[in-house]
Image (cartoon, rainbow, N blue to C red; front, side, top):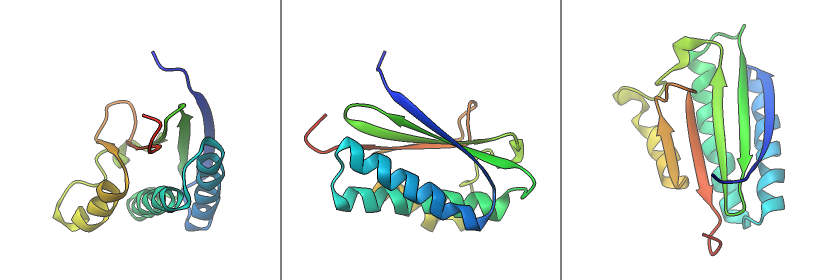
Length: 127
């Protein structure tokens, strides 16, 4: 089993808080050794997920974002008490956003029973 640090944010599902998630991701990614381009990739992918969650979610529910920091990768897990948010990238109208996320991240886990989705990026040269 891998050892990791976990940093958890719980925020209202509102557009004005996406920058908080992006800034947190940037700080964590920088601290563990990602280069500038990879940090930007992570921030863009997170913004895509957050924007989709805001579009389909219930503004009364909070979103929980868990950053799992491993020695060679960052995994970002999105979850909510709002169970209607499962499989948010299903359907052809979501292909563009999902293709962006898949292009920028190394691992994308959709439609999990445990959470909404997770995205991971491996630090080049450390894996």
